[in-house]
Length: 359
Length: 266
Image (cartoon, rainbow over all chains, first blue to last red; front, side, top):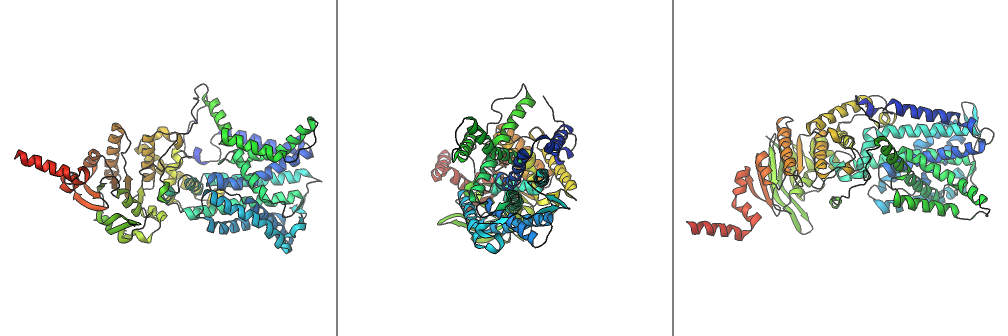
């Protein structure tokens, strides 16, 4: 058994509650830093891909997991982030500035687009955002001078402080860029969680009516959630497009948005860890399946990936709605309480009392 | 001096008049109860004060401020906190996080400060936590501090909701059926707490309650409603013995029967 003794409010405010937790994350960071020396270029590229998905996933997680607003249109904001980053670079801005600016611009535009969607709930919001994603596809084709249309763009050369970030010549540079971005975004996310705004997000998710009664401006909170979420998704999209090397309207197909949503559900809605765990599943599943089909001696089966992915999602919704991280939390609690864990500890009480009719 | 004043308030849902020309005033520092049969419009009055509903006629003033000029989320900022009849807590958060949402109106830090956790935010969070801990101590919620709401029993949720309202440091507290669904002991606790909220914290309390035992013990004044209109107002004893109130609760025949019975005896 482990006991959490709290002797100061700061233990709940600072990033890491105790030394044990802190050293775990330091160890993880060290492992991530030396990873390029441990695995070869191909797998390093895959890990980079995981981190990029995680950045975009954190964006959607903030909106769907934290604020309870579903979005099937985040591919549109990823595209926006990517194209604005490239356009800023063509205007002569250094990569880092263009990258951050792209995130900010995507966030602002996302917040503006969110305003008409504020009154929408559940399935209507999903349809609204899905329409955005499909619209984005056409817009990319129409706005050819800035997007290159169907021919797309070749990613420009990226330099940070004189170091060239090249996927083929030096995969570790791209890896560190993705790692840095994901740590940066995760840190911002974590900071929000321990601030009034993060609590307001959760309040809007769980009960809009009582959030209002506590003084939370629901419309403003949702707009901010959309803005921040789109900003993160924009950063993720910029990395995804640039990492792919060449991108056009197909790169940010609405299927990407759906995949992103499935990813955070599998990872665990509402947890930072969930975005990373989901990203691992989504990025490694194709590799895993192709190795599997190779070993079974069959040719590649079209649509296998999507099928297996869908089945995994259904299994999670049925058997573990809290996702991979939720499962880990249960295992961890069981271990910490051993031998006193009770079987039904995580069973949620059903409540039939809801004053939703007040709307 | 009256803190909250309703003047000629009327609310209609379609053809139904939920509240009809209701006037009342709650004085600073008193405990005031709204009683009445189900559907009398008690909770509707609360929802108008919280600005979830807008009355078609009449005015609601709080400390001289016209509440109808404010939107629902601004009401908490004026110093009015409330609980709900069917508990409305943030289910997927801990008790502590729920109470910290109550501190929302006291936040001062800007978005960049929160995003980067820089500047005054750290000191502010300590301050919020301190205020919340005082409420936790007051209502004996220490054991439940880090528990998720989703797993808590009904009675505890009721107290957590009261705590969340207190965490906003209100001047006026609206309690919608604070004792419904509570055991005898829990109702006792609730009674002491309401007394202390008034005496120690100096908070004015307006509550809706069916338990006349509780009402007569903690309330200074009671207003009885039926079908959205005022029946009687006065001390708990006065209201309870008012013929119109007895009629609304027990029906006309009951009144005439008691009257007849009394007549026969004479």
